[in-house]
Length: 254
Image (cartoon, rainbow, N blue to C red):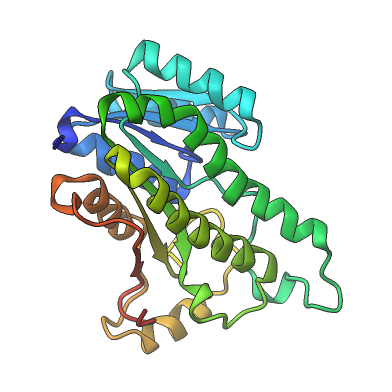
């Protein structure tokens, strides 16, 4: 089965702000029906839905809670149609400020666990809620959001990077299992983005350093990364699964 973007219903987790909002806008621009998931960003998510028009709605759920995810998917199905595409972008609260992050001598397992619960646990809960629909129609697209810090851990974001590395592993095992159902599962990994709420605490000098080390000479924007997510949901990527596409202007070669 091949579905153009304009025929798809897309669930974007953590879409109330930042990168998630950029991804939601990108799909809406292509004519998709967009479910904007949020946990705390109620006002921002509802404002985004109003901005995007009648084919977009905001849905509350904590993706770490299976029962909330199941209720959300049921509500999306009733109002927009069952999701054909899952973009798992939700992130546990995090600030990209290297000076403020715990080093190994101070790091707790609870910090790693909190990030992993949202990154991997959230992906698992969403896939379990969507699997029957994917199987029934013999089609589905899943895109997870990773980080180039897995390949290039230049700052001590131990908890965040470890969770995203685990998500990459889960992306590939899910691709193996869901492939026979007609479902592709891929990851898009960005670098530091200019600018999201999470990167707002990053000093301007850091952005300048990254730009100077990047072949394209600039820091990637949320809109640029969102376009790569569209590729994996589009018919052009129908034979691609289990892959990790790094979108950072060439800073990291994977």
